[in-house]
Length: 461
Image (tube, rainbow, N blue to C red; front, side, top):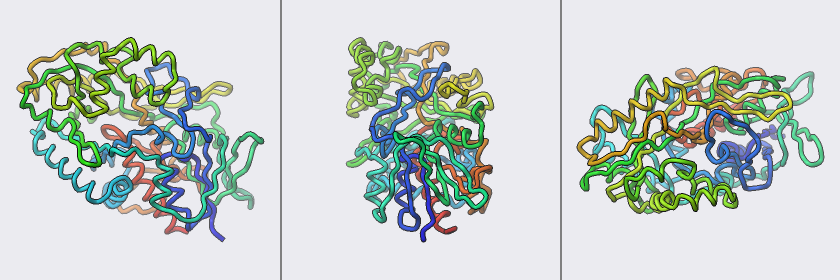
């Protein structure tokens, strides 16, 4: 008889793990709903602007119903900061790339990456490699197409808690659905509910109904300036390069106090700052997740310049023009004061503020960018630092730090990296176990971790 695996959450990691384990285990996926729309009322936040209501979604595929599939590898330094031993991790990254791209597509993207690095790296900055496949993928559909096999059971409902095996009784997951509370028994429970959902499930599983799940970090993002570039500037050639199947973009990275700031250029119409300030600056992305919001539609109509520039960016037109907006994403450290707060009788709340030390690091990164590319920039209009409008980037990370066992060690091939300390047989695989996340978009790293966890579980079984 097959061992039973219950997977909490059918997002990026949960979908892939279900498909990878389906033939060797009896797999049940627990998903919060059948809908394909973000959940707007799950978490409160008073510390900063959230990205599309924290980009939480329900339905098979989770946020990949909306996710743009931006793929970035962490370098060895960032992997160690994240708690991942770099040695031996490369094959899992290769599997992750292959999940999204064919060998031919990947080879072309790597060729462009090498070209971008040769064009830009001068000593004060490094180049981040972002690949956006032109085809957006729902992770559930893609995983099932890549790895067909035995049936996967799906249970819809809200996970209350995970209960470890005890006194001869098997472990189980308590799921509240329309018919009441159901128990899903399992030999292994994989919690893949995301950087906000997972710590809530784990805290409640351990009786911590009044707790701060600390260590949260993300990539606060802000438009900080507009620039006019020389017609022959190298920055134009690397800001976006299209292949037949993907868009390759180079982020320019600066590091201060062991925190990275990455600069991306996005096409603009002119030097006016109105399109990159105020609530309409990300309006098309927000409408993608909430297309029928009257409030957001009014914002859209109130800033047509932002609409025109968003269209330039989305269609990749304008990347060879003269005018660009400067967008930064900053790295955050794990802090004991930043995280998801659980309070009995209230909705969980998220605290993700940018600290003065982080803001200083980002400011120095922007100054370094302007200094390094002074010869390329003919004109610039910079928003004062005090008026930088940060928003959450929805790469929720770090919040399971206090629940999981330990960072990976050199040569460690055990499950300890994923294991929940006080719930035997429970493992975490999503952004909540990342102690750091580099410059942006942790999705590729999470797919690599899902491949690693599936391999370890199969080997143990």
